[in-house]
Image 1: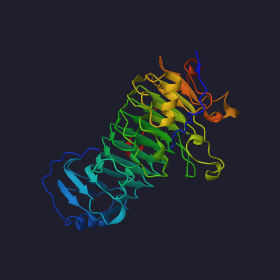
Image 2: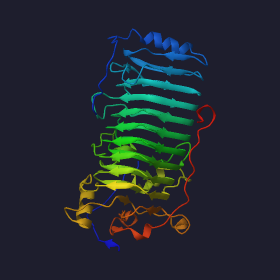
Image 3: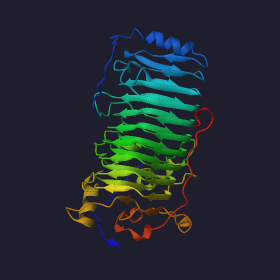
Image 4: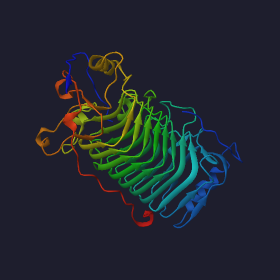
Amino acid sequence: MIRRVSIAAAIILLSACGQESQTENSTDTGDTAYQETLMTELLDAQAGDVITIPEGTFNFDRSLSLTVDGVTIRGAGMDKTILSFKNQIAGAEGLLVTASDFIIEDLAIEDTIGDALKITEGENIIIRRIRTEWTGGPKTSNGAYGIYPVQTKNVLMEGNVAIAAADAGLYIGQSQNVVVRNNRAEFNVAGIEIENTFDADVYDNVATNNTGGILVFNMPNLKQPGARTRVFNNEVYENNTRNFGHEGTPVASIPAGSGVVVNSNDDVEIFNNNIRDNKTANVIISSLFSAGYNDASTQDDFDPYPERIFIYDNTFEGGGNNPDGLELQALKIALTGPLGKLPDVLWDGYVNEARADQSPVLCIQNEGVEVVNVDGPNGNKDPRISGEEYDCALEKLPVIALTGPLAE
């Protein structure tokens, strides 16, 4: 059965794009006395070095950087070794790494002006048991990214915690061959974001209290697109924090209450997750046309359509009962009444007609799950709820195998 309603007033534009931690420290330097020591170690590092940072809280007023391959940075634990940038006056990041064969583990980076940990243009990267946090809770003035590998290959992010980033807590951008597992993202605008990345497995994570829980995006005007992401065995719940992103950024338009969001990305599997109580929708599927961009802002070969999104064997509960914004509220009331809820899946309705027969946007093998198609191409005039038309299956994606020194 398909339920339809004409709603002139309900114009829907889907988006494209905390708490303080309790720590026990044996040392609190109270100044930047350790800063010169660590900066010198990073500057003098050679391949094979292990830089050990002891237990304590250490204050920095400027960015740290590493440019040497084959270095490990190791603390005593994410709640024991704390690098605080609360009084930072120089630099765009807490720690910037431009290197390969790099490991960082067991420490925290707090209150940076910009991104907490940025790793760029490296291969064979392990980021393990790192906590990034802005201890004043969600604020627009916080740095954009917690953990931010970009233009990297063969990356493992595991056991990390990201809190209160003004863009994304755990972010992988323009990368290849990535595993993101056993992490926790909380009170960020985007909890975990996979953007313009090929071949990523995102599993056994917890995303809660963010604006949007897990995002799989393709954005225009970047060095590479992305595809083939598996999102599975995650807990994605109560991502209802108000959006505090910087105005003009893609994530600033994400409605509070978004569980898993796919925008302009292809070959995405969402399976075996527990997705619940995300007040706008548990899953959102959208195109670039619903992201606030115009054709002039994108390169000619950018593919704006999401395709081959396969949703199966998830547990959905709650959600959709209090969508963010008057327009989505109007949609809910018109379709389901004041006490109703939007379906688990919200789709903007854009289809590439040239490939519609060969490449479906959405296939669902999840009992009882329905989709609200908001009819974006027609100005949202005829949104409708259905389940049967999405009853199809797609070939499943392979497991991501990390290579070289990261191979298990």
